[in-house]
Length: 124
Ligand SMILES: [Zn+2]
Image (cartoon, rainbow, N blue to C red; front, side):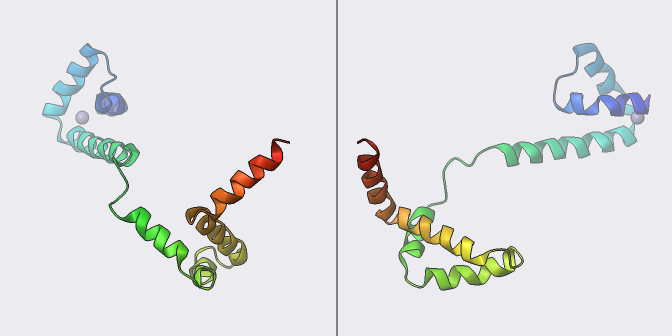
């Protein structure tokens, strides 16, 4: 019985079990501490996954400002190359820095101006 019940626990936790089976599993859970333990572990896991999957309502206050301020700072390339080298174990730190600089350019409006210019050219 335990094997059968535990096999149905994911569906039970996800509330996709037919009503009769749901009742049977519920009855068994009340009497069986082992299955109860498995059930609460799976329920916690499902709740954790839901929390992870749910998008945050909005980015933290000031995050955009902080990113823009960071992007506008001179010496970004030098600072970006440092952590990137360690983070990706030496894989193309220059490229990471270039991407960060490109992101900074977009953030400061340079990218937008460039994009507009490109559109004007491509319409011809
Ligand atoms: Zn059981």
